[in-house]
Image (cartoon, rainbow, N blue to C red; front, top):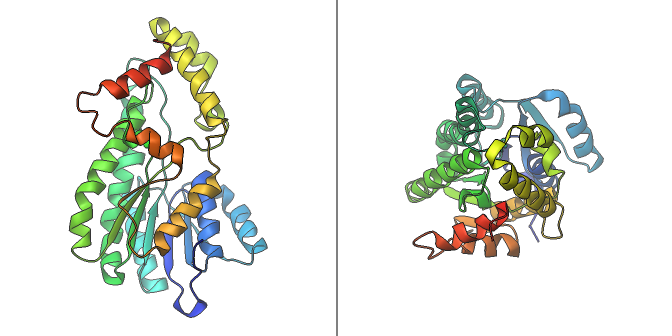
Length: 289
């Protein structure tokens, strides 16, 4: 169980993508744990509801608008943290977007958009806030995915971006550690949700346009919808608890899976030198025995 900081030594954390899901749950959990929490979101329509939910729990959130693809806005937010809070103790990169579809079915814009939000957004936030974290000897936590380790069918754009995130942060970790900043990657598996709705998927439209890929896409959508509704799927609050524990732990690992299922899934990649274990597994997802 996480240890709640006392009021006098409350630390400041900024979280991106807090309008829904993991980001929202993490903002509420950290505020309840005594952190001065800056909850940012691209669309501020959810701001009042988030503040009200925090208030019910006796906590307070500083909810602010921030688009992680807007470098000028990111710079202003770093200045805000410096001037308002005197710095920052932790950054949680959570903002991201799904991109489901094959390379033939998606536009190049879809690939670039996925990379812009999921990868370049993380780089831009890290670059802007790392000077503050150096001063506080703080921690940089990024919500990745098991899809940042294991490539998944019809997720070429999303997994490519998450692979890039993991490569960036794995490379950064020893450099940041040399200046006393902790870098950590959280890897959830499926998070309980209406997968098709939350990923913005028009399943019927995708299948109608899939052509030769229709049987594979149909099998993938059926399998993945079951996975997101299964007993293995975690709640956003479960992931939030892992983030809180990572911030409070004395020496957390660099890469942290959020469940036994996620650990076992990621372990498929370990020692898979020729890629046969992973590809044999994922071929089954698209109906290939």
